[in-house]
Length: 408
Image (tube, rainbow, N blue to C red; front, top):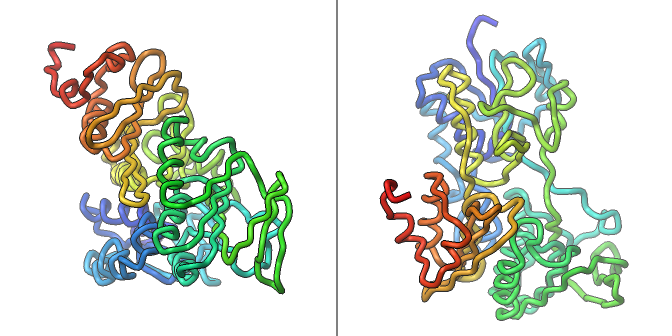
């Protein structure tokens, strides 16, 4: 092709960050972003929080005003799903036409796990991965109605909190032994469970749906595997997501729980990068896929830099957050492989510090932003905080963070 053309497949947080970084780093060629939805790039975390509560309008969800993209020379093609990629020919198919590219970035995100077969075709069953989902679900959040949340992860629990505050009778059913089992220690799960139960949410753990009852084509009730029957007016299915790597797989690009990339965001296909929720990258020697705003932004910027020859390695200290009722859960680091947890309480809230082989690797801070910020800075600086030290009476993460490096 005669003209340089970078194409970004996807129009979410990672895609937007990548496009902005390319322009900020001096790329002046043609730049096109293709998105499935009929909207310019918008924030997804508020869908289960501020937008569902009707505190935010659609305009506030947008990452930038719609005119911004044209101002920086980015063509945003909305409602334009890509149907095929030819990595060798450097073309893609969209809307029945072929588009050529010189460099390609895949920021395709995730999709919900398939609905359990017994719920297929029933009205009153919702997912929450996009703006259209949130718009449909919030019409159901009316006082006195009964909401069943299937899945005790962050999205499910955040939605449960919004619904409970709106006056609904809410039940959360988690198949695992406890809510947040995949992502948090038992102590954090207990704090969040107590928080929900204090607001009237009924949490059922270690159970699954055995039978479904319908009234016409509408969901009416479910029976759990212990015989418990729950009548419902609406149900949110929050059983997790899968990386959207179908296009990459069909194009012969290596995938394994996501599109496989290296430290720089490069895929197995020359001229193709990937970033965000869809990308599996090496972190601490383990292929890792992160679903967070932090990762979407930072990994996308790293990939954009590499596309322009400013190569650097992406080695993040991940961070996440979850708002439930008036409590903020803030997380820094990855707790995988932890073998000990230290619980610290303060007048502000409490924190759970995770340790592996005697060294701090992550923190869950619940209403304790001060400890969160200190622990995050220590993790980013590579400070060696030991289990014995953190277990001492009076241990203060903020004071520890401020200790001169020479004293290490």
